[in-house]
Length: 626
Image (tube, rainbow, N blue to C red; front, side, top):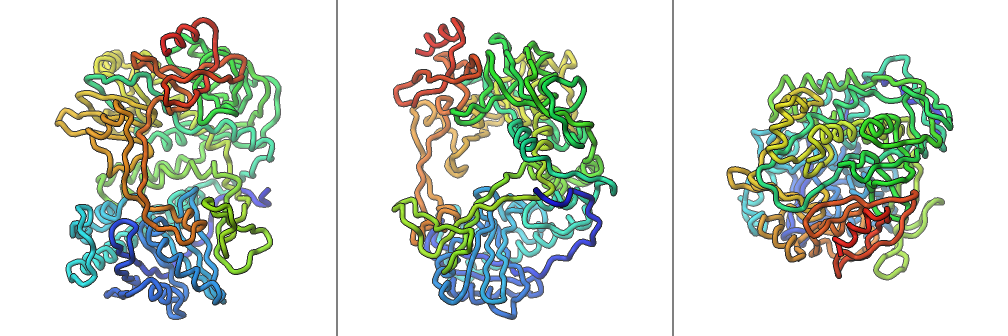
């Protein structure tokens, strides 16, 4: 475990080194290299490269020592074109490591002799398209349009096309500089590699000088991590509903961080409940089958994803969830747990800064956008995973590394090494992430209760409800509505009709005739109302052009960058924890005695679903499903 605690950062922020912005143009998505250019932050004119080899030469040039190379979405596009050239240079003593954020590549670290080159990705700081990035931070240098999205192929001999490439570099340079300036001006830090890391650095400067937070003991941290379930997602109907309102919580997680604080201090083990104390408990619970929505999550050992069962089972939850579950009729008995001395409100100053910026500046301003990015990315940092996989290209492995295996052949990949690295940082406080997300779920669940458990679907900070139910709840004063106040609900949009298809998959037709579409796992470029509805009714798939991830290309040398992907739109039949009857009503996976057993197939093409039988009530539902 780490030898030092999480404390206030009182150091002088280090100004970032110089940047060189670069961009590649290719023959369509994932096609052959066509052109490249770079633009240093102290230069006015770009440098053009006829090949990837020339670009890598520039990166390794001693005159560029200390410069950071930056591309927008470079980690998952431009960097892929660097990999073959880097492999060719391994005999010259070069090594290259992937910088990962989860499964996503956010850059490369290239070493040769005493030179180290950092290749970073501005998408990890501002996760929007370059057009949106420049629109928010450098509207005077927005992207040109030469028709690439309509099938036009970039032509390096066309001056208009090269001007497009240069414009992208100028826009990225201006937008990134504006982002760096905005973060430093309002939060007193310079950006790190990612937005969450930047938000963490900014927040640490607001901590009380006397504050200290050590990582929990391994057994306590593991126990609390079991209570980290993320956002609330459910649906109740898969049929079309006319007249629907989507309501959204203003800044859900920042408002919870400000209102609820987090548990601090040294936790004590207990076999009994300690009323009023912040705690994490392993509980035996009974959720009535008649309850409109189970308020308690379960992560079954043999099921995929998180379930929201009814019946009797054991689960690990926070004291906040225990209290709320009892208010809505759930019986809960504490088996064991850890109790913390107190709750402290550590985020008030940080959230207040974000709130003030968002209220003072227009939505399209850099200040507003920076505050939004910072406030929404902080809490997840506390729940960081303990182990990460590292990938490295080199002739010889280091002591902890093993050969990467090509999944196509089962054979080792030449000069490619992987290792498992333990992350040990004082900011790893998973009980904070679990506490914040639990309070957010309870906030949304309670709103659903006040709507009479009649929400059609929920998605993290949003509820979709028919207009009549919404109007009645508003008339009763059961909904806290305010367009600006943190933690209050606002009407985000209205629909002439709305259909939830599966968790995080839905389609809605707005009153003006336009559509809102969401289909998890399917490229947004391929989502059209006709395709989505056809996919739902006929269980069709869609195919679309994409690229292999940079991480995959690391272990598949020689594989083409471009790939044609085939995806099925999400169906309720594929959703862990849910099943639908023929009438389109959605039911939770059911539990008995805390165990799971195999159930039945709802359709011929569907794999067996994990369902647990709970008496005659389930038998009647099973008959309806058959």
